[in-house]
Structure formats: C-alpha cells, structure tokens
Image (cartoon, rainbow, N blue to C red; front, side, top):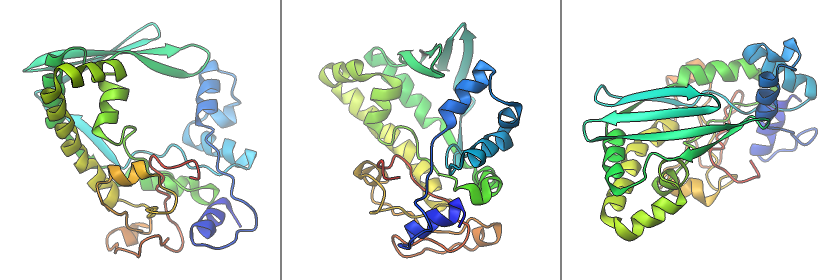
Length: 272
C-alpha cells in the first residue's frame, strides 16, 4: 500500500499494511532553504519538497494551497514593507489606518507579531471596515493541482483559517490578548460589534471550504473547536477528480470517497 491508501484505509475503518506516518516537515524544509544548506534535489520548489518526503518515507499533507483566496476592495489599501527582519503591514481605510509589525526570529525560521493592528477602541472601526470590504473566491484548481502532484505519497490537507473564531482572530492576530481584554472591559459594545462582523465575513470562507474538495471529518478526527467554528455545518465527502468535481454529491457523515480524496483536518485534534 502507498501512503495515501494507508490513510484512506484508516479513515474508512479498515486496516492498512502498516501505520500511516504523516509528518509536518515544512518548518524544517523552510529553515534549511533559508540557511542555504538543503540539497538541490530537495530545494527545487514543490517537486523538491515532495521528493524530500518520499525519500524520508513520510506521508505529505502540509501545506497545500488554501481552498480560497481573499482580497480587499479598492477602498482598502494594504501596504507591506520589510525592514531588516521585520515585516510592517499597514491598512488604510476611509475611517482610519492601522499598523501591524511581525518580527522574524533568526535561527528558528519563525516569526512573531510584536505590534498588533488594534491598539485603541477607534482601531476597531478600521478593523470592521476592512473585514466588511474583504472578498473571498474559490481556489479549488490550485488545491487539486497540488494534490495531484503529491499523488500516492500523501493527501493534501484543506485547512481552515488559522483563527477559526472571531475572538481567536482578535486575540492571536489583530489585537493580542491584553488589548482584547481591555477592550472587553472598556469598549465592550464596539468589541462585540467587531466580533459579529468578523464572524459574518468568515462565514463566506467556511462556505467555500464546505463546498470544496474535502473529506468529511465531523465527529471523528475534529476537535470541538472545529465543530463550533463551522457553526453547525458538516463537510461532505467529494472525490477530488475533476470529473467528479462538477457533479459532487453529499455522502453520509463520516464516510470517505473511494479513490483519490483530500483530507480535511482544519484546526483538528492531534489525532489528525
């Protein structure tokens, strides 16, 4: 059996010839690419990344293209500049401007937000404007292309937004924990309004994920966070082949389509 067949066998309740081993080698790959000490055969784009997994005997599942793309309309200007190891992002809107700074951490191939967009209550108005003027579109073709490339070596994982609830979005990306708590105490009405705006805007993203090429994981490998974030939705199991994409039908809960399927593990428990 190959790596894809082993994982599908487990999801279908069968017994593979051995335990599937899927590892996230993305950080290691990125770190060594940046260091310039990765062999050429592994550093050459998507195919090199795939070959590294295959040679290591590791199933590949991260990171396929997201199932959606997003962009602001013309009334929102996003400016991104790089200064040393820092990336500065500025959002300019008719109701104000906010800035976020992400600092790269040398030697670890990671980064951390050191300045959040939202610092004072008025910044929430800018955040609300930006989120209501954001559009999303399906990105299924890019996802399928990646899954086809990975083939029998693994299964592309369709991820949800990093923060799957509006409160998570504020705490981890836009305001930080301390500022969010202060806003809850002193600008609660504006904060609650912002949470509603973000939740409504993200509904469109989850609609695209639900309609996209994914394996239903509800109730099996998904944590309660995922269930809550989907607001009652259940993913349907649809084959990832182009012919099936045009005539996909819903499958029973917890079922997995035969043949080529893509794993949906967004924000799931460690068992994924």
